[in-house]
Image (tube, rainbow, N blue to C red; front, side):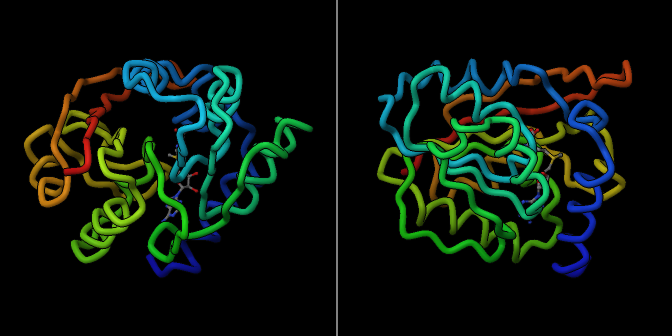
Length: 206
Ligand SMILES: C[S@@+](CC[C@H](N)C(=O)[O-])C[C@H]1O[C@@H](n2cnc3c(N)ncnc32)[C@H](O)[C@@H]1O
């Protein structure tokens, strides 16, 4: 899908659906939080949530005391909705409306989190660019927490085709710059009483 169509697709989703009317909704993003807590990061660690949408991860990170958070999404509408939900607290966040494929950062992050955004990249050049971007944006020993649909997960998300991964296929893609520290399957109960199998991988920059 062309980039402007992709932006339109996601803005339409966030215009037309409430937070809990999308399959990926989580009241508490527990798997992501468990992984983040296990990394024992300093509270001033620089964190980016890539393709965050309306995720409540940012609320939870603020509650945990993290104070250096960037939230990025291709959809301006999703960012507006997340900002409104947070009210005054939203001023503590650096909000970025960008296609990850076009993202240019002057910052160096300690943690790059992505749940269910990377798996929309189908083109191998975009996948490679994503890995190069993550590498150039992370500090040495920086970590990635990546949640994608697993090889038993759905074939589509939000009506769009995705790529499914297992630990060896994801490692193959990231191994040039990253070491796979751990991976796990996580079953996500959707708001529609169905279940989706995710694979979460944690990488460390070489
Ligand atoms: C399935 S949703 C997941 C949202 C959030 N990470 C969560 O776990 O609730 C995918 C998100 O990725 C965003 N997205 C898709 N393609 C993107 C791209 N190329 N650049 C930035 N964001 C993108 C969408 O706007 C959407 O918010």
